[in-house]
Structure formats: C-alpha cells, structure tokens
Image 1 (cartoon, rainbow, N blue to C red):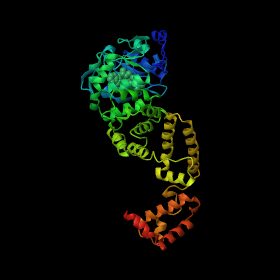
Image 2: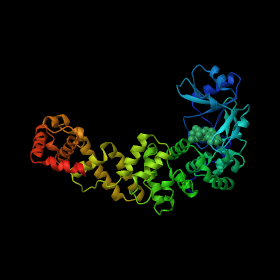
Image 3: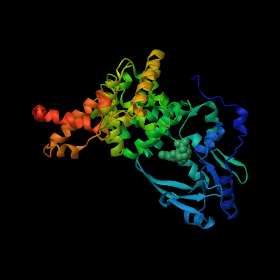
Image 4: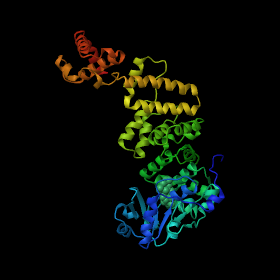
Length: 446
Ligand code: ATP
Ligand code: MG
C-alpha cells in the first residue's frame, strides 16, 4: 500500500520515548514503592511510529489498593478491571492498571485475575504491536511477540493463535480493522483467515462496545480504510444491516470518501454520512437510519438528530433559490440543523470531486448564513404575536391557534417585514372575518 508509514529500522531498534513528565512521575512513584511500572499499548505503539500522544497508560504488578496507597490523589476508574487513575503534578490523569490474566472468556467478556508478571499481561493483549512494553525506570523493553518487527514491516498480527484469540473476544476483529486501517497495515494471513471465520460471531458483542468501536474508527483521520474492511469482511451484516449492501454499490468508494471529508472530530456526523450511503443518496428511509442507530444504542438525542438529518438531507437549497425559499427551507429543517446539512452536502460534493458543486455550496451557505445572522423570522417563537394574542382576538382555545400561527409564520417567512404585531393582528382578524378559519379547519381534518 502506497501510504503505509515508512519506518526506519534504526528508529525501531532504539526507539526513543518521550512520555509526558507526569507519566514519568507516576512510574517513579510506583518504582520507589517497590513495584514495576511499564508503559504498554497504544502510547508505545504510537511512539514507535513517531506519533506522539498524551494518554500514556501504565501496567504494574501493584494491586489497585496498593496503587491507591502509593499516591495521594487517585480516582478509582474501574477497580474490577484493576484500573486506578493517578493525578500527577501536571494535573493530567494517568491510568494505572494491574497486570491481568484472562481466566475465562466467552467471546464478549472475560473473567480476569490479577497477574504477577508482565509476561502474563502481555500474553492477553490482542495484537503484537499492542503488546510491547517499556519500563521508564530502566529503559528496558519487552517485546515477546516481535511487535516492533511487525510494526516496521507494517503487519497486523495477533498475539498467539489467531482463531483462539478472536474467539475469546470478537471485538478484537473490529479492533483489527481499526488498527489495520489507521496505520495502513497488511493483515498477516493467519490473522486474516481467523478474522473471516470470526466475523459471523460479531453479533455476540454488546451494542455499546460495537458502537464505541465505530466511533473510534470514525475518529481516525481516514476512517474509510477501516470501513472498507468492514465491508470486505462482511462485518456490516447484523449490526449494520441497513447499510450492509452498500459495499456492492459502485458508489461505495465515493460514499467512503464523503465520510472522510467530514472532520474526524465530528464522529457522529460521520455516522450520519455513512447512513446516507444506502441506496440512492438521500433516499435512505429515515426509519432505516433510526433502526440502525437504535440497535447500536445511540442516545435518544442522537437517534433524533441522526434520523432528522437523514430525513431532511433532501430536498436541499439551491443557489438559485430566492431568499423566501431559503427561509422556508430553514423553517422545515430547523435552523439548528442547517449547518450540519451543509456539512453533509459539502462532504459529498468534495468526495465527488466537483469543484463546481463545492463552489455552489459555499455560495448558497453564505446566503443561508446571512438569513441566520440577519435574524429573519423562521420559527414560531420569532413571530411578533403569540397564542395569547390570538385568544384575545376571540379565537377558541385549541388547535386553531397553532394553525393560525403557522399561517402567519408562512406569510412572515415570505415577507419578513410583515413581522409587526399590528400587521399580524390585522391579518389574523381578516382571516377570521373572511372565513379563513373554515379553510384552516378544513386543513385540520386532513
Ligand atoms: P487507542 O487508545 O489508540 O484506541 P489502544 O491500543 O490504547 O489504542 P485501548 O483500547 O486503549 O487501545 O487498549 C489499551 C491496550 O489494552 C491495547 O493496546 C491492548 O494491548 C489492550 N487491549 C484493549 N482491548 C483489548 C481486547 N479487547 N483484547 C485484548 N487486548 C486488548
Ligand atoms: Mg488507549
């Protein structure tokens, strides 16, 4: 693969770690108290790759209660997993986890026991590149599974026998896609074959773990690499049924590119973009989006937001639209969603490579933005009158009030200068006198 990070062998042989001061302080605290402190996992992997990061975790032979005795400021982060958060002088929190050993696994969770030595702890880790340990006190490295060599060769490989490791915890399959995608790794043949065998069992996982894993995939700069693997391995079946056919669509690559075109910090919007990849663009039934989001146990607010965005993806505003049409559109999609809808369309335009569409979107957005900052009335509570005013005019309490307000709003959206109390009250009076109420009532019956 062309974009695999090139790693100089010499860098790999003598990796130089520059952890944050706070981590060294925590490690020293443990060592001084007579325990071992090893940095393991993501931070070591990323340091070797020359990608510095802030969250360094430590593994130790100290038991959680011992860790809490060593430090003044600790937070129990999951004592059952053996994790204690330690606040360092730099006010950052470092996770210290006691060496663990899986004693029982069933594909979705493990019964763990504390272990005495590092080797046992490394043996339960998923991939060779995640099982490299470094001890700050002695500058010692432990790499019993040749993770450094795999990293430098750009290979993703399980620790130990692949079939067994995935069967212990099927989430490792999805983690594997994420790591292989994020670092452009080749998947070692046995690992790959075992992934294929394991994919049909992904249904055993909990929705929460699958969802969190997706969000991690989506927070990588180029999420498409891992998502493409989800498609290739059939891992969309089940959890992502509604989009499981998308990889067979000739536009799949373009859909993936449109996910990448949204900033990685907007991971939920990336989920929505992914949902839009079913069938025709924008023809995703909101119901299907909703059922997928619900299956993955997104929050109710996220389900509402995601479904709403899918539902209102089309029709969209057009550069030639008059300002009244723009305001009508804002009213129908809800102004708080306008920006997100533009982001989705912008990402699609970018993925399609059409600079013309991008330019048109920039132009249209400027006009939408002008309406927004100009404070044009587009929602009921922007109206210069409210329900009480209409009651005073003699309208009966009930749904007619709402309909009358909608009617007035429609007029105001068309001509914002009409948003004056007296003007609107006069209009309401006219409508009542002209029997406009009958037609409003008629629309109630529809
Ligand atoms: P990142 O934080 O960048 O997602 P990470 O490697 O730190 O990557 P975490 O999920 O934070 O990933 O886990 C920390 C370490 O714990 C991993 O590097 C790996 O060694 C181990 N680990 C995490 N989850 C599993 C798992 N399901 N099976 C085996 N080992 C795991
Ligand atoms: Mg981590």
